[in-house]
Length: 276
Length: 276
Image: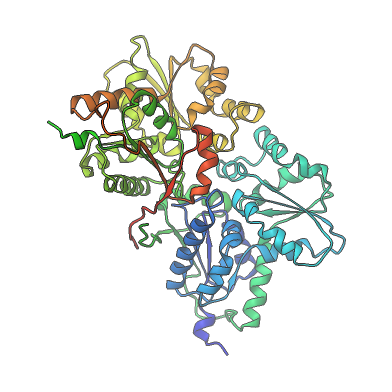
C-alpha cells in the first residue's frame, strides 16, 4: 500500500530538449489530476547525433536531477535516450521508468494485419536498432524498414512544418519507404508529430502513422493504477507543473511555444564532474 | 625573448564541433612548421542555438582543457564562441587568443569600395551582433545586413552541399540579401564554406564571399612573429597534430571526412562540476 504522500508526488519527464513536450502535453491531457516536472536538457541538445556512452551519461544525469526533486515515476520522453539508456535508467532509478519504444511498438502492432512496419528517427535511434529488436521480439511475422531523418528535427525547430523545403526533405528521406507501401510508420522521435501532416500527404493514407505520446499516456495510467500511485482527486492543490531547462531560460520560450503554451521555467545544471 | 621550448609548443584550436576543421586545415596549410591540438566539443554541439551563459561556460571549459595540454596560442575556430566568449577567454587565458570576428571583418573591409555588407551565421552569432559592432567600429560608412541561417549547419552535417534541397534552403534564407546586391557577404560560421558554391550560384558574382579561415591563418602568423613564437624550421620533430573530441571517438570520423582526411582522435570530458 502506498502512502498519500507518495501518490501526491509528481511524474518526472525528461527529453534531450523540447520535443518531449509533445509527450508531456498528452500526459497532462490524459491525466489531469497528476503533477508533472519536465526537464529539457537544452544545453546539450540534440542527443540524436551523439554516441551511446554520451547519451547514457546525459540520461543518467537528467534522471538523477529529477530524482532529487522526488518523483514517483520517470518518463523518458526522448527516443534516442530510450533507445540507448532505458535499461541503465531502470537499473539506477528507485522509481518505475517508462520509455518511448515499448508503447510505440505496442500501438503499431495493435492491428493484427500489420506486416510491413517502418521506423524513422534520429541517427542514434536508428543505429541502436532498439525498435527493430522490440518489433522482432513480438514473434509476429513482420518486415521492418528503418531510416534516419536527421534534418527533421532542425526543420521543426525552425518552425517549418509544410511548404516546399519540408516537402523536398520528406521526399528525400521517405521515397524508398513510400515505394514499400508500409502498413504502419512509427514516428520514432518526439519532434516528428509536428511533421505528421506533411508525412501523411507524401505517403498517402494507406500507411498508419504511429505517434508514441498517446500510447505512453495509457501506459503511465496503467502503471500508476497497478502500483496504487495515482493521485487522488481532490488532493491538496499543489504546484501542478514545473519546467527546468539546462540552457538559458529565455531561450526556452520560442521553442516551447511551438509545442505548448508558455510556462514559467527554471534553469538548472545537471552535469557531474567527469574529467577523463 | 621566448625560449625554444615555448616556440615548440602547439597551437590550440577549439570549435563547438567539427566545423572548425575548415580553419584548422587552412592553418596547417599556411603554417606547416607548427604543431596543432584540435578540440571539438562534439558532445555538446551545436553552440549556435544555445544561450550566452551556456556558450561562455562551454568555451571556458574548452580553453581550460587546451591550456592543460600546454599551448602557445589559442584559436577560437567557432563564430558563436567568438561572438559571446572572446573577451572572457582573453581575460582567463595565459596565452594569446584569436577569434573569427576580427580577421573576417578585416578581410571584408580590405576592399575600399565595400559599402553594403551582409553577415550570415547561427542564431547565436547573429543575435550577439558581434559582427555588426566590429564592422561599425571601423568608422567606415557601411550598410550592414545580417541573417541567421540555422538549417545550414544540419545540411552540411548531412553531406548536402548542392541539389534541390540546398537550393531551396539557400533561397529561403538569402532572398532578401540577394535583393540588396551586397558588396560582401561574411560567412560567419565555420561550416558555411562548404556551401559557398551554392551561395555564389544564388547570389551571383557581384557579392564577394568572405571566409574567415585564410584571414585567421594570416593573423596567427603575424602574431607568432611579433611575439617570437614561430616554431623554428628543423626543430625536433614531434607529434605535429592531435585531435580530441568530447563525444564518442568513432562518431568523429564521418564528419571529419567531410572537412579533412581522417586522423587518429582521442576522447576527453571537459565539463566541470556545476550543480545549480
